Length: 396
Image 1 (spheres, rainbow, N blue to C red):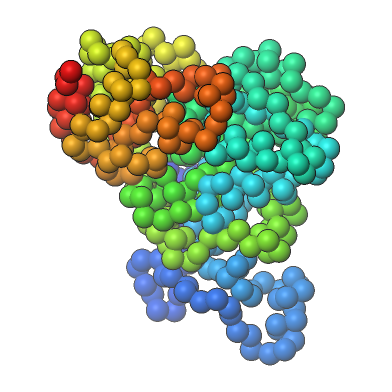
Image 2 (cartoon, rainbow, N blue to C red):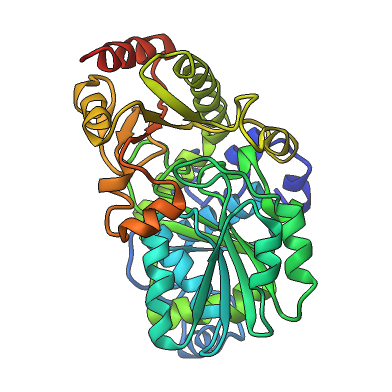
């Protein structure tokens, strides 16, 4: 199907049909091209393809049909022109920064981001790229932090793990009011099923495909979605030269994951809403962080820019780290790991795992307390997960 035809379809249909290129074998499932390189019929053809004068595959570091199918499908789901796949979510963020910035440039970032992303942005200082961290929801802070050298506004929404919501349209307008400044949105927690930042004015969307795009915790990968010109001129040359490449096998896994993404995100969100509503009534729970709750500070904003509220629920315990660890250690259906977006539910203590390498004052400024617990709600029955949490919370 043509891109124009695909764009008119619903997200569930796009997830099943975009990026399909049937070979002469007439396979009904996407093929995997597990090859390092591709051959040519003549020296002239090889020269033309290498020179960019003719279409064709060269080397799987930067041209592979399976990876390309994943890129086309994700771009269609995000309502973007083009996509480039990478080896991980962090390599997608790094590729975005290296492709768009140079020494002397400046980033304004939300401080409410994945701990490793914070570490990466801090590392960039030695290459002459400075970052100012601000409160995700404070528009005045964003505006004050922008300088004449600011080239990127970077954020996650919802944030990980506190589910803060940014006004994407307002931040896009702010970025575009300054010369050469772009808005980059990490859409990992929502996926394009629940939120399409490009439609809200963002310039670049990044993903950790490792999470919900796969959906079963099998492979590591990342992706960038933006304009075809930006992919061609800024990111593809970097991928070709530096090689932060997605493997064809992983691309095939993600392709199959995208086929069920709409159904899964709806199920994750429905169960998370049910569990968050139960948690706020528990006497040992101090506070619940979930945008689907009416008392969430950005609940109305989340209703406007998301189709549902996602599968991540965080909460603080009445007590310090010992109380949080007790819950983590005594659940039976939740896996203790730092990942999220799996079909199996996950429980995490962010202060000592995903954000554990940050300084204590950084965690405090981000709201990552010792009593915070993060849940990634899987595809189990919500009633069973509640029963499991109830017995874990009920221990003295």
